[in-house]
Length: 391
Image (cartoon, rainbow, N blue to C red; front, side, top):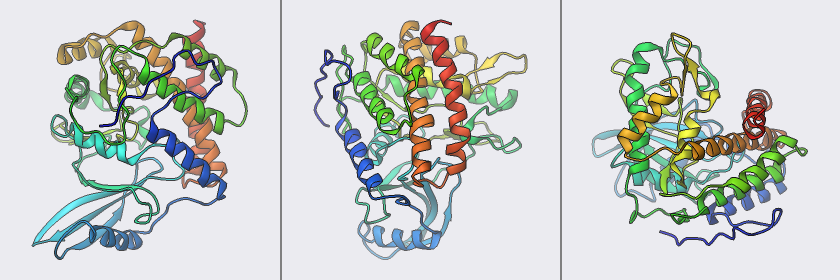
């Protein structure tokens, strides 16, 4: 486990602020990739992926094996995903290769995601992490191999929706999924992680603003480097967030993107089979995950018109059940703060990084990054104006 980084809370606005080492490194590397010019992005065919997997696994496994039935996966944002079968010793195992994209709408670190999966797999249903490939020579970008988990991210009889926006589960599935959705989040936040090895993470101190300081520094830098022009809402929100950042009472493991679309379930039984997409995970204040799951964009109306967080559960029952399951209190002021924080970083990634990467031809999702994402970012800007100004 890495040591805690001291945060300088009195540093004047505009000066470089402390952030986690791995995250600073990936922003630095992003800058070097951009200098190399357009078209610097990953993109393997299943045949090439099979060859690369065979070569990589040859460095990890003893004895004979075969990589078979490689299929490219849909979903996962801009990151590449392939399912495949590993055949050895007469056994066939289904696995997944996830390759970090050079053009994702926000920079993430595969080592952190791999570490977090290992830290939570004893208490939550997650894909088992198997092998980590940090050297880009293997797959042209850092990558990892995990267990394959069968399930669907949304009802199959519904209209496919981008990134899980507005997923409607229906009364039966919502009733079955909601207690699990809340319970898994409560388990994550109350889990005693101290003493767990977490490569790739710096560890914030309880009773400080370390965690939020580092996150704000990361997203501020991303906006400064990616935005096409200044935006008054972002300028206003950035100042508000730095002035009002709360002290964290207990540092928890956070998913960072906990919502509909980021868990797989069995449509017949209603069982959540796996919580997925941990690439935005970090150590910090539990209220950040709670507020994110409550963002209006993820929800949908229930049968009586009531708003359901993540399309599953109303806000007050969500909070009450979370407190009961976790044994942790929900501070409404901190919940409000992290609602603003989550909207802020979402706007940075949607309106700045996504469109900049599309302009540089670093992503295969140019249409989404130039249309859907900026539109969602504009919606989030409206919410920021309402929350920060009270208008």
